Length: 329
Image (tube, rainbow, N blue to C red; front, top):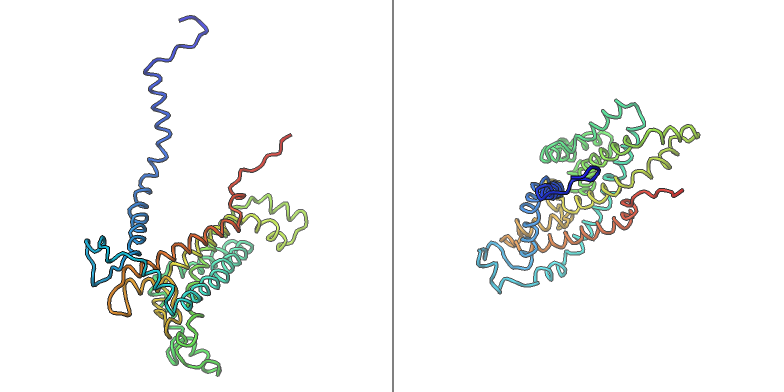
């Protein structure tokens, strides 16, 4: 070999280089493989099964492996029954009202307000206040709902009626029968507000202190700092919390089921997800209608996808993921 010239690549050296490149390319997928397996087994496959089930007439009376493939059990009747159901508009209206009010007032509005307040007061006091607001989320749902039922109970056992009775304000009746939506929205709102509060507080704390210091040096008030410095930098958390909480509210029904189970009147507090549960597992007609309940779920999935796309458009997701533009000298 002559001096000054690099050595010629050998066959083994070329193989080693190719192997190292392949290993570096496959390493991320190797680390992601457990998650991919879990998502496939417990989310994607069940989702496909639900979509297939929604086009069948399967229920407790004709369930069986062969029944899945029987031509007599395949039809679009489930979707026809949904949109021709005489309570369809009632259930849809309940769902829209429940999601919009709970989302705007509590899950985003109050969560953002609490985060802003607790990050602009004494650090320890703000932390203690956030811990108190986080309690509804970590409390077991049955215990949590029993607390709300104790609050709404009739006189003399109900806490609210016991307080308002001597003042001549309370009616003494069971408040879940007279004002069910107030308690449903409050019970779900406190849980949702705690989730958004944590994310917004973390995002506010992550804002570089130089920005806040510069605004104070320029003479900005606290409100001006919040409006012109902090809020514009919360677009990512706002997008995530709004999207996640909308989908969560659309699919959650545990609190409503435990509080009122869709009552007290006929479908008075029935929402879409609770209807899907009732149809699939507890039917008014005496048999569980798995295909019909799955069809309600499929429509709910489609609504969730549409809402997520709308949020991505409203929050200008494309601009959020763009690489920062560097001025060319």
